[in-house]
Each structure stands twice: as structure tokens, then as C-alpha cells.
Length: 84
Image (cartoon, rainbow, N blue to C red; front, side, top):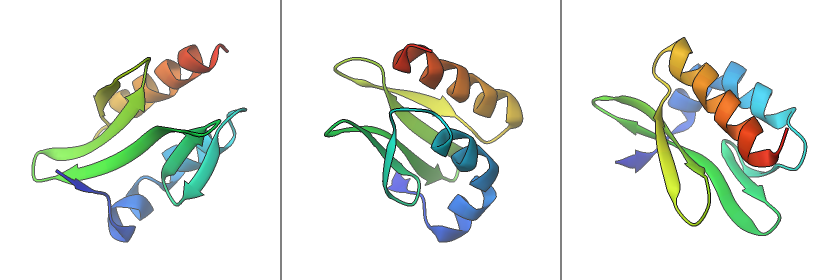
């Protein structure tokens, strides 16, 4: 599964904008977020859909963000991990 390219990130821009508004995240490059000095969230594209990997401890949890319900689930999980 490859990292999301520019066209895919364009599709996800409203989601990425919502993530940018969350406190404690640093966007190192478009769609790649860090928390403190650790990779925290990034996106992938695959023939099966669009996915986000979110660090929820020592490992990453994968979210299907192809549809709006998955995008909302990612925002909620990100807020929970950030403590807010």
C-alpha cells in the first residue's frame, strides 16, 4: 500500500484541514502529521480505497477513510488519542 499522492490528498483536503485544527499535531509534509517527534498520522491509497494510519500507542491503527463515516471515526479517534 503506497503513501497517498497529491491527487488523493486533494480528495482528502477537508479531512486534512480538520486535522490541522487539532492541537498538538505538526504537519511535516502534506498529510503527514507528527506528535512531538514521532510519526502520528499519515495516509495511503490502494485499489481497495483510501486509508489513514493513526498511532494509538506503540502501533498504528488503520482507518478506512474512503467514505465520510470513516473520516469521522478517524477524527474522533485522533481526538481521543490527543486527550481531547
